[in-house]
Image 1 (cartoon, rainbow, N blue to C red):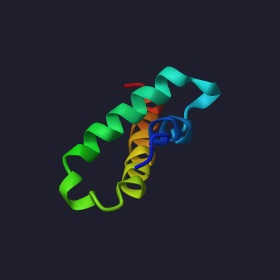
Image 2 (cartoon, helix red, strand yellow):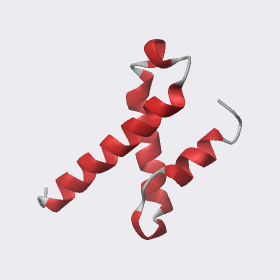
Image 3 (cartoon, rainbow, N blue to C red):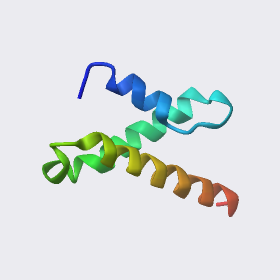
Image 4 (cartoon, helix red, strand yellow):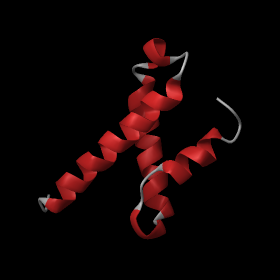
Length: 68
């Protein structure tokens, strides 16, 4: 992973209306989830982390939509 990966990850995190703090929270949560699978994904972690970002965002959106 290159030096620009964290910034690229934050920019890739889907955050409505340029909500950078939410994007940072999403990325940090996703990296924490990926840490548990790091032994399996250590060769190419970026694709796995991007999938975790998408799944986490969808989960947050569903939770907010249901009013929880």
